[in-house]
Structure formats: structure tokens, C-alpha cells
Length: 267
Image 1 (cartoon, rainbow, N blue to C red):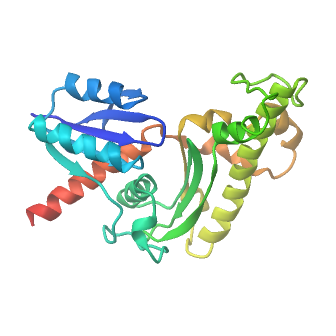
Image 2: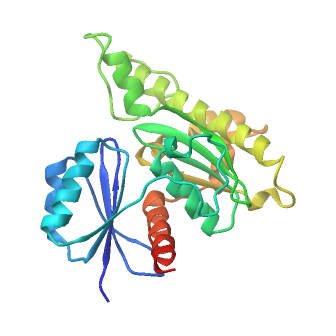
């Protein structure tokens, strides 16, 4: 059985997975930069290359050239109408393909979902059990927030280590903890807003609503020190205990798109 290579290209990193029809994608590696990407593409054995990219058009063109010169069948996922998704965007194609693929995955699993992807940017998307995309949010991710501060002052530095304290005892720690607090504030408000919107369309067991977390910065969600002070009251971040960590969410959605698109073309 020949394998298909799935490729997700983000703003800063790329991820690859091996895929066989009707099976869950097998994650292979994550990397940075085009040189590392093309080295990986040359190393694996596959007949078809399926990719989705939110990167620059130049990257997409180079992948097309690579596929042509390597005799690989190439499939590019792009946001489009259909596939059972009821879009709230007037211009569907302006929805990022990475976000769209996670909606396809939720639709394929027949579930209402609150999807939070924390990468270069942190995004929220909400979909109901009928495939209705209710909308979402976009904000700077952890690294972008830190860089925005540092780039405006040569005296500031960034710490990548999470301090084991509630309040920063140095400027670097204060920046890290402040950006982390902003990230968690996004998540807290996102959970509240998403459930409020879903309550208008979902009837029955609210526990059936899935919370999916993905992206490298999801490690910063929640704060044990803050959770201790909030344990005696309703606190949205406590709901993250029931959330599913799905690090390859976009690749899973890409596999769903590839299967649906193959069936559509086959008639």
C-alpha cells in the first residue's frame, strides 16, 4: 500500500505526517525553514503529496516545482465553500486554510467544538453539530507578544523559561508572565464566549461540546497558582482539564479533506 505524505506549513514551522487511507495520520517530524523542509521531502517514500499552507506564495511555488521535478502527485488544500460547512464568513476564501481544516475535522466527527490553536497567532473557532461555523478570534501568540515589547526597546530581554512564581521578580520574568496571562485571558474569554454562542444552537448535554487544544503555545494554558485561588468558584480555565490535546489537529483535518476531495473527483 503506497503512502501519502501530508504537509502543514505554518508561519514559522512545518509538520509532516504519513497517511494511509482510513487510518489516522502518523506524525513524522516538525521543522523550520525551507532547506530542512525539502530535505525531509526528499527523504521519505510516498507517491502523493498533500499540503496546506498559510505561508508565503513563494513557498507554495517552490513546493509545486519540487513535486513536478520529483514526479509526485500534488494536492493543495484551499479554503472553499461546501464540504458540509455552513460558513459565517461572507468571503469564505479569507478564512485561513489551517482553521478551515480543523472545522472539517469537527464536521467529520459530528461534534460541536471549541477549537483553540496557539501558534504564531492564537486563534479560536467555534462550530456546532450542524456544521455551522459560528466565527472566531485571532490574536498575537506568546512569541509575537514578547517580540512586540522587545522590538520597541533595546533594553528589554525575553525569557523562554516559565518562572515558578505568580509575579515576576525581574523584567524578563515579568514580560513572560504578563504575556502568559494575556494568553490565558484570551482562552478564558474564548471559552465563555464560545459556550454562550453554542447555547443558542446546541440542545441537550453540554458536555458533548468538545474543547480541542493544539499548537506549541498550548503549554502555557492554565496556571496552577491562579487555579488554586479560583478553585472555590466557577472559573473557565478549570474546564481545560476536560479538553483534548490534539497536537496534529490540522494534519488530521488535511487527511479528511484529501479523502473527501478524492471521492468528489472520483464522482
